[in-house]
Structure formats: C-alpha cells, structure tokens
Amino acid sequence: MKGYVYKGVYIPESFIPTWERFMEICERDRTENNQSSGSKHIRDFIEEYVRLHEPGNPQQRIDIISKLERPYRAHGCFDCGTKKVIVETRVNGVSVRLCEKDFRKRKNNLNGWKYINEKTR
Image (cartoon, rainbow, N blue to C red; front, side, top):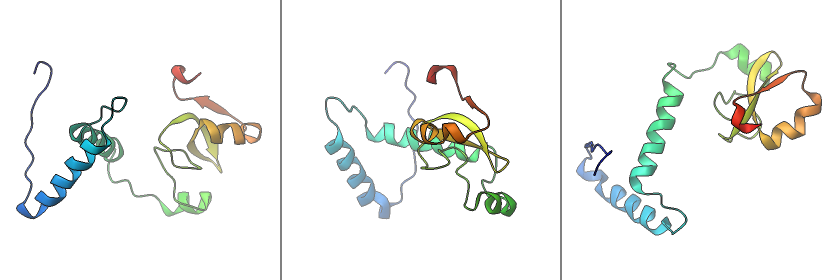
C-alpha cells in the first residue's frame, strides 16, 4: 500500500492468546462509523507513550505535589484527566491545563489563562 510502512514486533509465544483476543475485540468494536483497527490502537498507544516520555522521566517533584495537594497530570486536564485540554493557567503557582468543561467551571476564579491553540477558540 502506498504511504504505509510495515514494522514487525516480537511477540513471545505466551503472549499470542492476548494478542488474538486484542484483535478480536478490535474487530468486534469496528463499526461503519468507527473504523479503528488494532494497528490504530497500537499507533495511538505509541504516540501517547512518546508524548509522555520524550521529555525524560515523568516523575514529579514532591514540592509540586504538595503545592497542588495531589499528583499533577502534565498532559491532561488538571481536574478530570481528559486529554482534550484547551487552556493553560496557573494553580498555586504551577502551570496546569484544563478541558473545556472544567475551564467553564473555573473561568471566573482564574487570574489568567490562554488558549493552547487557535483552533479551540
């Protein structure tokens, strides 16, 4: 197929039943509107893994956790964890991101914020 590159992945024999079940689930969940495949799920996982680990070890400093009174979700919404974030703001001096729903809830109590990209405006 034009535009595609095939890569191989080592799978130990003990993992084959899990792999087969994964592919069955992907096929079962495939509908006319949802054309996701096993390959798509694997690509999504790899993209997310690279995004989270590319900067280095994702451990958090204890002073950040204590300021926020909980671990900080660096790439998701500070309140709910969703990855569909639209704005950046500061909470207790730490830069955090919020999804649209949580942004609306907090908007009147925020001193400053900015859209992450122009498409979300």
